Structures are given as structure tokens and as C-alpha cells.
Length: 384
Image (cartoon, rainbow, N blue to C red; front, side, top):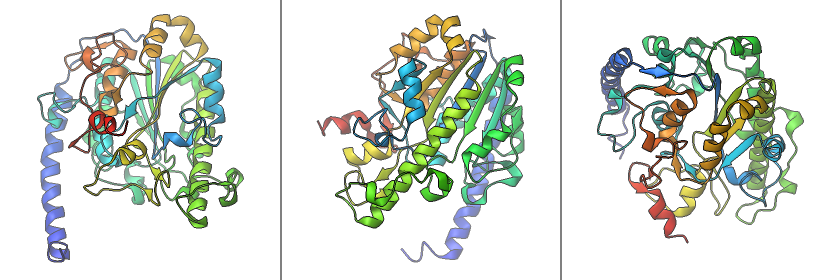
């Protein structure tokens, strides 16, 4: 509607949103300040949370045996027994800012509280005694990558009082390619010296896909892609996406190799999926009222996996058993904080074992609601 989309109306809407947001985030600061931790066993001394971007899991042989080989490093780790692949995870939204609000907060639909009444898991870890590193290629404070500085990046990550309550270290510069972000990775001795949670947030496969990898990763071309849903230009986009996935695998593989000598457990999870001419002549993500099983499959399903170093597997056999037991259970990424608390052995008022996929008390029947109004499991049952 042209009237509602006028510059004046958009300005007034943005102004009102900032007022509401400021009040909301002020309340969140008070919540984090009040949060208390009952105890922490530090049973996982080093925890890595690798946060991917726009990852269509069906473009990896980890999830699709017919896929092109885009994840050789992760496949090798799976064969060695160091990587456990979870095959039933979804994101609550197909956009980054909404999803990250849920992933980082202990809030979940049905908890009976407002989002600002629930602490961020990063603040809980910091109060428990962990060092919390945040290395991001999207939200880097005053040096923010302006293209990707959205509502969540400019608030819960970069608002100074919230950042102080969550992180002990935040990088200052974004890089063109995710591999260069490893230069901000702390020395291995630093990680081993004190209980640490390190969040590594990548650009991953965010569009424009060709911008996500250097020229030496141009492995796939339009001519090597067989796809009946699009033309040569679309096949080129598919090739670029798969090249970005191949490069992402190299970044993750190198990071895990750097930490392989530590007593370390890592969780890899993408913020959302991406549609790449998988079932129709359409790419990227859609936000119309229409929701089909195919849209949910490619835009909301996400890869999720746990990496455990050899020493971690040796020292924590009970945790290995818990991680293996969860790999086929239904999961929505808004419940991730509860699994992270389990890994650390954190006990506090916001932990609920029925929301912890690593706990024997986990409720597999918790309704997975995507886009605020769609029951994912009911939707997918119509496709079977």
C-alpha cells in the first residue's frame, strides 16, 4: 500500500520501534543482572558453538547421499567417530535476527514468560565462571559490517551494557572470508587455561554466495550441475552455493583441527536453511503467507552436529552416550541453551531438563512451531 510505505510513515514506524526496543532491552539488562547460577561442575572445560549461516543441509552428503561432495572434512570426522550428526533439527524462523534472539535466550514459546524476563545463555555462562568469547563475522561492534548490522546484531550483541554482561572478549573486525576470521582465535594455551565457551559466528553461505569463498574454491561450475528446475544462470547460482558450502567445510575443519588436542566439545548449528532451486524455480528464502512442506524442508530445517575430540571422548563417556542418544530426536534451535547448560554442568533456575535434548527427561513431543504460526511436525506429516 503506497501510503503506508511512504518515507514519513516508515520514519515514524522506525522511530517508534527504537523507543519500544530501547525499553525492552533495558528490561533485559535488569534480567541479566539479576540472574544467579546455583552451581557449575565445568564438566566440559572447552565448549565451542559454531554458528553457521543459510545452510541447506541437503547440499551435503552428511544428510543427502546424492549430494555433491561439499563436506569432505566433516564426513571424515564422522567416519572417525568424532562427529555425531543430528538429523531432525529445525529453526523457528528463516531469518537471522529472529532466530538468534531465540537461540541465545532461554525463552521458548510456552514457557509462560516474556522474552526479556529470560536470561541469555552467554550471560549465564559468564556468571557461572566461564570465559565467553564471541568471534563474529557479522556483528562486530563499532566496526560493524554495515550490510549485516540488523536489529539483533546492533542490540543484544553490540549494545555496550548487554555485551559487558555476556562476553569477556569480542573481535573488532570483520573479514571478507571466514577463514581469515581464525586470526582472531585465541591461542590454544589460552583456551586450555580456563573454562571457556567460544562462539564462532560465520558468514557461511549467506548470499551473495560468490562472495563467500576465494577463487581457489571454484570447484563446481554451472556445467557440472544437473538441475531441472532452472536454467544455466540458476545452475551457476547452485554451483556458487555448493562452492561456498565446500569452503565453509574447510573453515570448520581447520578450526576443529586447531582444537583437536584439547578436551573439547563443539556444537555446529546453522541459523536457518536456504532454498537453492531444490524443488521449484526459486532461490534464497521467501516470506509470504504460503507455507508448504517443501518450504519448511529447505528453509527451516538446519544441520546440527556435535564434535568431540579424542580426549573428550575418553574423559567423558557419559556425555558421549548422551550426545549419541539425541541424534534422531526432534529438536528446534530455540532450545539450544538447555543442551549447552548440560554440557557445562550448570544448575540454575532457568534450566529445564525436559527441554534439554541431552537429558533422559527430554520431551520429544514439545511442539515445534516455525514462523510463529506453523506446527512443523503437523505440516510435514501431510507430505508423507
